Amino acid sequence: MSENNTIGIVAPQTAHFNEPLTLKSGAALSQFDLVYETYGTLNADKSNAVLICHALSGTHHVAGKYSEKDKYPGWWDNLVGPNKPLDTNKFFVIGVNNLGGCHGSSGPVSTNPATGKPWGSEFPIVTVEDWVNSQARLLDQLGITQLAAVIGGSLGGMQALQWTIAYPDRVRHALVIASAPNLTAQNMAFNEVARQAIITDPEFHGGDYYEHGVVPRRGLRIARMLGHITYLSDDAMGEKFGRKLKDSIKYSFDVEFEMESYLRYQGDKFAGEFDANTYLRMTRALDYYDPALAYGGDLSKTLSQVKAKFLVLSFTSDWRFSPARSREIVKALLDNERTVSYAEVTAAHGHDAFLMPDEHYHAILRTYLSNIEVGGNHAK
Image (cartoon, rainbow, N blue to C red):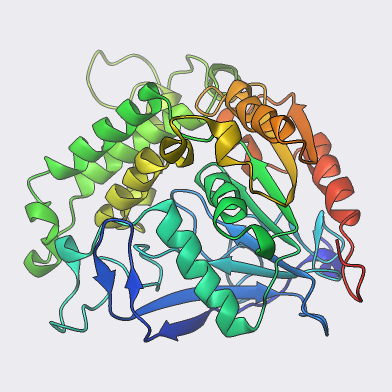
């Protein structure tokens, strides 16, 4: 990758909030921290800010590297940077680690100010609505009254949608990618199996495993392996692994197939860097999100007050967040005569396609983002 389109070296920042935040559950955080990163420069009238909302296992580290020695850049580095589809020569991009996360923002692994110990099981359940409200607090602190755009894939797309509902005057454009207005029963079932794998791990200790100096690694491995299967399409799995053997058949329960080796690697890697309590809360937030619930299940009524323009994007091979779910959002917006562009990208990667540097997908994003005006009194 040439130097002219990479972010380069970046550093996270921490925003502290002393004003209490009341959560949807009724619980309240008396104070909290949000860790975030920014890329590009905020313009004079602060009209070029773009918020990126992360998915289940994402973080604030969206692009760039922390040092030259880092092997991998941020999780959406192929999209964000100078002259990339989300061009940091034009936009001021913000990535934030959500509440309940395990990468610096207040969450189960962080210190409970009331006890001086990790929150553990006592950290409250958080929702998509809570995340968006806390993100709005961060924008307030940064002096940004309106976003040029909010962007997210999967669970991040739900946050982007929620932004337009909760703060209609603070968002000009919403890019909702590989997402849905709520989870299907099947998706909720996958989440429950993943949670049970963690909760029933003997090392879980009711969520207070920090005090025991252990990690429910086995449960987290299985949860990630299950999730990973659902993020890929059958075609992608077939093309990448097929039925290839690691070696000759041994007639055992050790790793025999390349697919098994891959899943175990992904599970081990994830269990070594992600917090189980955070995983439980992220999947629960997915389950709970259903903005139409307050409107008798009518998504059109739910979106009647939104003002943002939308790009809704789905992928043909994504069976976890199928194109039909994206079209539900599109229909509800059209019912309200809102401006919405829709693209269904032919891609073989399944749900993970939103993370891939697919040429067609990136061309759509580049075109849409290039038409967002910033600066002066004509920002739209």
